[in-house]
Length: 347
Image 1: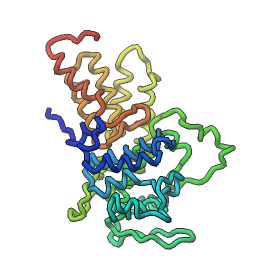
Image 2 (image 1 turned 90 degrees about the vertical axis):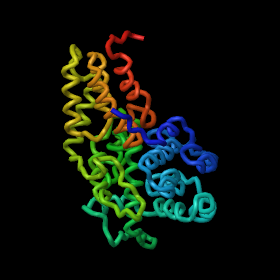
Image 3 (image 1 turned 135 degrees about the vertical axis):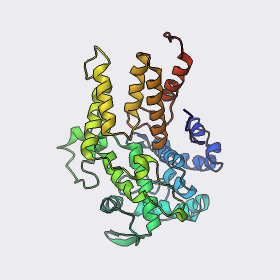
Image 4 (image 1 turned 30 degrees about the vertical axis):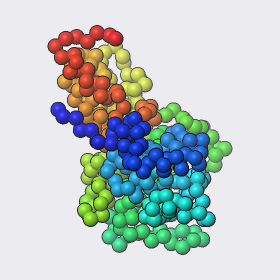
């Protein structure tokens, strides 16, 4: 079975930014000089998050202005976080000169628009609104988005949420994007960071519904449909996400009988039936297959997992740190070949 590796994957894994994009080293130097690596973010540092979103958009073959939106998407601050690295009020010219007018316009709009309202409105749509979208703001002019802008910000929103969301956000932003503010004192346990680092039980089904409007974008827009959720044609039901996450967590935390491979294998297989759109159950199934000497099954699961990691550009849960395409699945693919016709010994 031939490998399906994105040409940018290995440079991304090596942090070889010049090979990813010759412009990136200078832009990253400018960004990191603003102490992005010193600011906390939900699953790491602000620097990690910005790079992660840009990585995903790169593996989705998005155009330059959208990749730069991912890299700088919250640098003017926004309604969720106060992480202002650049001054949107007094010095937009700096980013305009460095990134170009269109990339800076997208960044400024994404930082100043009511993003929760945008997400709510998008969930109400089955197709991309041809007339665009109007976003009302309190004490500020409405923001008018073209239909292409709606698609751009939908793609960026999916990449942004997917890169960072785990069980801590499930608690703190319960019901997102229709969450309600809860008093911190009464809900201190839910907000205790980082929490148990379990996979989300709600965000992926929400993202699959956001993706519906991206399934058939006009070719002239130059916006490839993200590869996730069967190229945005499938909707993951909330109950399936909940069931899959619960089964996966039971298997990963060894909450099942450990006397044999059967219970874990059945749990993970059922998990995949509920949610076939994430990598981790596949990668976990590859490991007992190796233990049992079933090289073909191990390679099949490892390859499927590697493809899904690459599709998302992120590891999927905070329990699996590191960028997409990490050595684990590749090792599972290679070991059956090396071990064909002989038993592998511990090493």
